[in-house]
Amino acid sequence: MALPSFFRTYKNRQFDYKPIYYNAEKEELQERIRSIELEMGIKHDDDEKEGYKPRIDRGSIRGFLNSKRKVKNRQSNIRLLIIMIFLLLLAYFLFYT
Image (cartoon, rainbow, N blue to C red):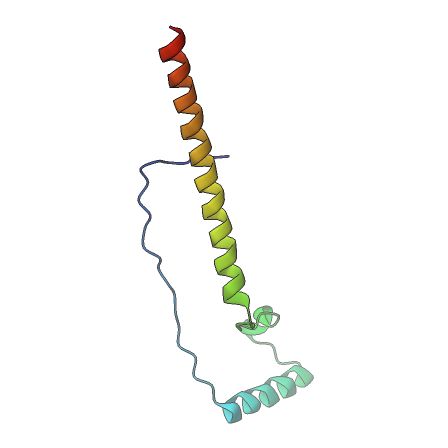
């Protein structure tokens, strides 16, 4: 477990957004062409990626944000615990030395 940094400045988020324009007719045509090519045994370079289909499900963004919030809460709690231990040790040394 890495020690949290008290003075860390976070970097800006960078997004790799590629706009998607949906054309139902074109999608249907490409799917028919692909199925015919698969029947004929013609292979393409993108056949390796066939299992991957990018999509956003309902609630996926909310789940991502909730997981990020949990991480930040955990880091905050650890930082608070370290500060309290430091202050207790400081008080102990001031009173008993």
